[in-house]
Image 1 (cartoon, rainbow, N blue to C red):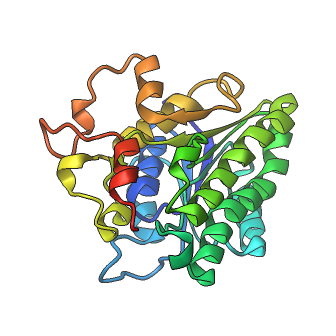
Image 2 (image 1 turned 45 degrees about the horizontal axis):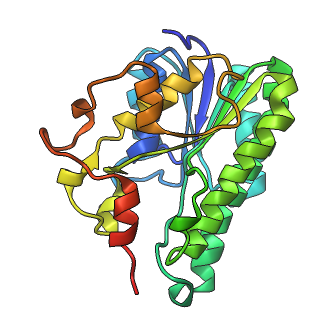
Image 3 (image 1 turned 90 degrees about the horizontal axis):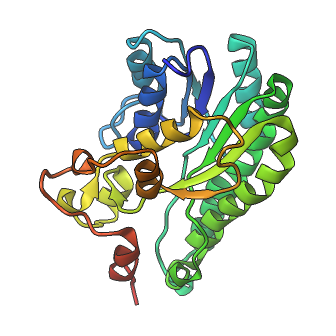
Length: 275
C-alpha cells in the first residue's frame, strides 16, 4: 500500500474511469473523496457518489462522498475545505470530470461550447485553485488532468472540444512550473485507444471489440502518483507508453474482448468526423 493514508480527490468518480481510479487508489491505501452530481439512482446512469463510497470503504479506507458541480467555483472551494476538515490534507487531485461534443463549429451550439469550457478547462483550473493551498502546505502533491498531448491534426471537426481539452493541457504545462518549488507534480494523461465508458457508448464509438478497460487508465494514474511528484512533472502522458516504460508488457489484460486488437485513437479521430 504505497499510498497509505494519502488523500485523493477524483472529480466525476461516480462511474466509469473516475470510479475505477477511485478504487485503484483505495487499494493502495488512499482515502478517497468521491465527487459527482449523481446522488440518487438513475435508470440510465449506473452508480452514485454513495455507492462508490461504499465500494471504497469496503477496501479498508475512508471515503468522503461529496455532491459537486465543477462549473461552480464555490462548490469546488467547499469541496477542498470539507476534505481538509475531514482528513487534514489533500495529496492527489484527478481532474476527470468531462463534457464531450465531437462536432464541427457549425454544429456546435453555444450551450454545448460553454458546457465543455466550463467543465473541462475552467473546472480543472479552479479545482486546482481550490486544492493547491493545502497541497503547498503539505509540501507534496500530484495533479492529473485528463487531457491529451497537443496535436493540431485532431482539431478539425471537433474544434470546441479540443479548445477545452487543450486548455487543460496548457494548464498542466504552466502549473507544473509554478508548482515545481513546492514539490507538486502536474501531468496530463490520455489513452492511446478508446476506453469503455458512457461517452464511447452514447456517442456510438464502436463496440467492446475496439475498446480497452478503464483499468489501463487507473494503472497509469498509479504509475504517476506512486512516484515522486517532480519525476515526470509537466509532461502530457499517454497510457500505453507510460506503462511500457514502467515494465508492463501484457496489454491483452486491458482488452474488453480477449484477443481483440483495439485500434489507436488517432485512427478513430478520422472515423468519427461528421462532415
